Image (cartoon, rainbow, N blue to C red; front, top):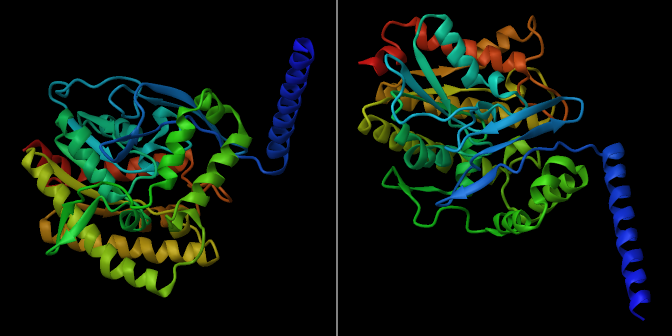
Length: 374
C-alpha cells in the first residue's frame, strides 16, 4: 500500500510538472509576457522598492536589462552617505516608471544620464534615482517625506506623468480639505483586494524566482491583479473614461494634484532645499498614435502639465514640460519610445530626457541649480 501511494503521488507530481511546463511553453509561444524582479514593497502604506535587490527585467523583443536597488531603496549600484560629497549639489529625482528607468540598464536611466550630463557640463552634481514604478504624485510626495529627505538633497526634481491624477484618485494618500492636501489617516484604497493578493503571492515559496523566470506566472499575476483591482489608469489602456470620470479628473483630481504640489514644496522648503517640476510625456504625446487610448493620454497629460505649470508659476517653482522638445526630436532621432504593448522610452529616449533636463538645470543663471546652491 505504501509503495502504491508513493507511486501515485509521484505520478501526480509528474503530471503537474508536465502540465506546468506545457503551460509555460504555450504562454511563451502564444502570449509572451514581460518578466521583472519582484521589487514591490510597501512601507507605511506607501509603495516603495524592495531594498538590496538585483535581477533581470526582460520584455520579449524589446529589452533585457539588469535592475539594481540599493539598501536605501533607490535604484543604484552604490549606497549614499547622509551628506553629499564635498562641493557637490545632491539632486533627488522623484517619479515612477519613466524616472525609475523601466527597460533601461542602471546607467541608462534618465537620472543616471542627468548626472553624467551635468558633470560633463562642469556642474558638480550627485543625482539619486528615488523613483518607484507605478506610483502616483501622492505616493511620490509621501516617499520624499519618509525616505528621501533623510539624504538631504539640495534640489528635488519631481517627474510628473499623464496618469498621476488617475493614481491619486484611486490610492487617495491625500485628501482635499479647504483646498489643501491632507495625508489620509489610512493610506491606500478602500478596496485592498489586489494588494492582499500581491502579499499572498509574495509569501509563496519560490515567488521571486518565478517572477523573474516564468512567463506563465507573470500572466497569472497580471490577470489576478486586473481581476481584483478596481484601479482604472489610462496608461494601462483598459477602457475609455466615462463622462463622469472625466469630470472627476478635472474637478477633483487636478485640484488635488495642485494641493499635493504645495504640500511637497512646503516640506522641501522646510528642509532648505528647492523643488523643480518636470513633465515627461507618454509615447502618445510624442508620436501620432491613433485610438481612444492615445487621445485620452494626450489630453490628460496636457491637463496635468497646465495645472502643474499654473501652480509652479504661483509658487515661483521652475517648471519644464518636455513634450514639445521630444516631439520636435522624434522625426529625426532614433526611436525615443518602444511601440506596441511596451511604450516606455528606449535608451535613446532616456538619454534625450536626461540631456534636456540637464540643459534646463544648468543653462539658466537663475535656474534650479543656482537656487539650490544658495
